[in-house]
Length: 387
Image (tube, rainbow, N blue to C red; front, side):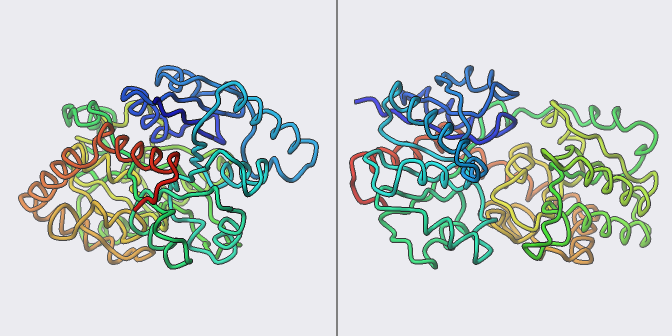
């Protein structure tokens, strides 16, 4: 019997990992539909993934106004009436909370929250609120070990909790020439080692005790300033523009970066050719304060020496002494030391990078990851204990 899965995406922009997973699941015979708020940038990728598309808001903001909530609930119910899902799979905390409130705690169709990252679990209030909205029909699928650990510590039974990573498609492992990035950077990086960061800019969240941006741009700027002061001849390139609604913060970041680093910094903004730029980096740095696997899975897949913070899912794939370097978050001096070690020992950097590439190639390909997710969903649909 074909498994029918209704995916909830709160955004019409981005969400590449869920969309890749939807494509892999569809290839394997799962019937997929996606509820998105409007026809946006990710509409065609969803269609290309082989999924049916329905439109309707599915985020926690829709709950605030009664009229908006009722309209959004009606769109969800209409999509379910047409598609007849066996499972509802939410990919964002706002989406799954909306679905729980819209359908009630004991709805006949089980809901699975594939938790894209541990951010909300790292704070008592958001963690308790999310879990409190769940009922007997709710299950969780963590996408890194840290997230699974948070739920177990919060008292979620192992039978309702799984681990299922997002994977990468085969084309993510195709390496291009390093000259592509150097040509783009031009004379500013000529003869210098290139330190790269790939991330959207997410603003600080002071109400959660996070005075700096989520991805740690400021920490990397400070680490690079230390390295340059010590005589390291390196250039920093940051790929990725503002996250939705963070345009003002991104402009502040650019001003800060150029004040600290001058012409040793290039900020390229959003790009569609990110995979082609990685091979030109001597080291890829992921200084996030909270993260799932993040862009580290991409740099490892392409065999780029990788430094990351010891948060979230990074330790699942960036393994000190084996596949990369881990440093504490919010620690620019430690970040600078790790970058210096990579740049100063290219043979060790290449060894770990190749080991990282092998790890991702063997264990984190999209089809393999999607098969694990599908097995979890099938067990939930059959109401069998899942471990």
